[in-house]
Length: 325
Image (cartoon, rainbow, N blue to C red; front, side, top):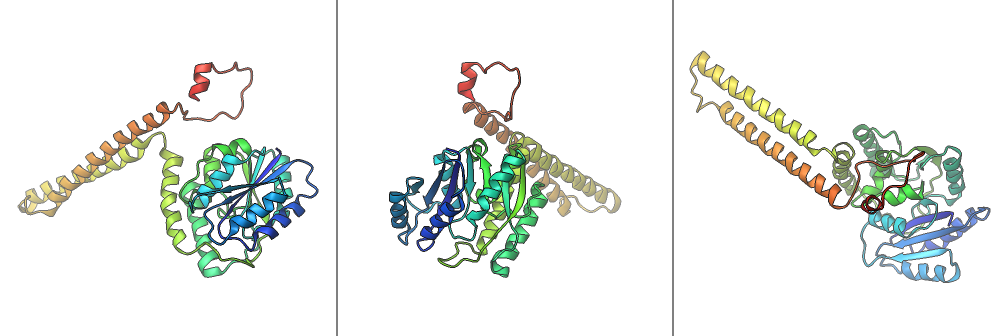
């Protein structure tokens, strides 16, 4: 299979047939083989009946129906797991992404020898205050924290090589952080402008509360990106800093006692120094526990703290090591 198109579906009954027609029309001149992987993420409006009807007449349509609504990240992960194409394209099921952009993504992926190509909604057709503005703020914050220079993290229209897509682990709201995960994996990528259309049927699943969930996931992503293999560096530094402040507070308490005779017991700085020292010890202890958890995570599953892009003149890995990897 040359191409897989993965689309999470949640209550998009009125859009599914037009979505299928748009994709098949856009890929009419596609020279290779392709499949359309539609993941029904617990729809309750009868979307699964539409999916079954389309799959019955088009064998290229693969339908995965989840038992309940697990969220877009989980649905996209399911699509990746069942996809067979050498290149995997993702898009939304609300027809705001344009399937006509898929050939352009594939050409860019091949011409630039990239591992991933991300779409950027050039003329976004969404309401400003509850969709576009929060998205712009979120994109700015993610770029600031992670250093990934992608202007539109929320555009679902993307093309990724199979090995890269299969290596991703998506949960929570992690589908929004795919560019960050791709950079963390050491992959090469670029961003290109794509079309964006207003929603004409169905109801949007996005609201302002997602902004707060994204911010919480951003903390997780930043930790995984920078300190996944060395948790002591972040917790230990915080602990040492707290202990240093505690020492400074204690010295200030002693100095005040010597200068004007104020009782150390009645000085709140003494209590502050004790609290900071305790916090420092706790932070360092959490760092040690994190180190043990990290080693258990990697060693118990045979995981490596690195990924290999390619090798030259290297013999095959021994069988025992291949099983561990």
